[in-house]
Length: 350
Image (cartoon, rainbow, N blue to C red; front, side):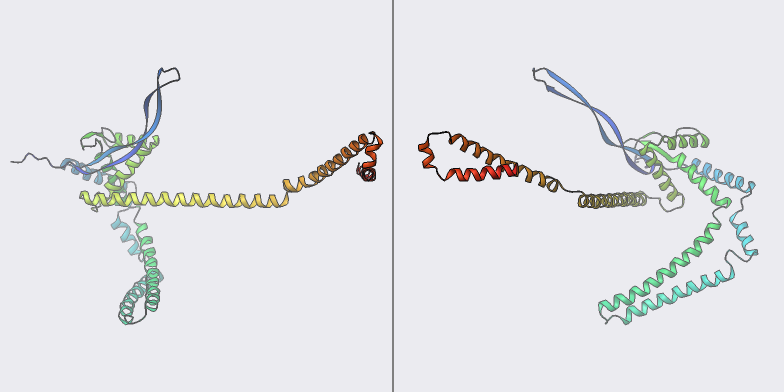
């Protein structure tokens, strides 16, 4: 006889959370003494959760909760689906006569388009790829338009039955199951505690509100996943671990695509603001004079002053040479005229 125990979990999953951890490192200072430095760093660690398999007793309590909640809704004035449907039938139905004709016409149009698509696929076998693609794309677009209009009619009809006693009882019962099946586990799958604490429905619901108000990101994420998974389970769309894993994968992919779209929109807005600031700075630079244009007149003045100083220096030097003996004057007979000319030009510039 085997002693192997059955798995007590419908599905287990993990959510990462950020925690502050102290890390110490030892080193030696300039004097050779050992110094311990402690830093606080943020790390990510997984937190494990599990959806418990319901027992027979829990199923009985859940069915009772559904019945009581439905009767409360009826006493409060909510109609059942049967009552609401009968009332609309007496009034001529949910849709008016023109809407009914339009609805039927759309279904007929969709049926004809499906037949046309099948005929086109047969007739276009020998046609070129370009022509085949154009014909089929045109038919598929018309089919999508017809389906969209049909869905609008059906969603308008289904929205009417949202506020019924059954629908209210169903939604509250899903919450009841979330509160009773959610658990915190360890990494090996051992139950640690009930996620929403102990007690009855009201006590657990109060803990739900407290956790939601606290705003802890990994707790909010876990609550969201519990609601998704248990809602699918209650509607019969997930019963095996593989089915839950597929839902979990789709949920994670949806989150990643949302984050990517948010990042892309942020980058686009940043690029636009950068381009605008660049254009503004370019316009301002065109309006305002550059440093080179401002400095050009000053540089010209400095160059002229430098030339004048050089000429004056040469004049002073020639004057000092003129006091030497007449023997040297004879050797430089041509200089006085040049000096005189430089003196005059220097005086004019000064």
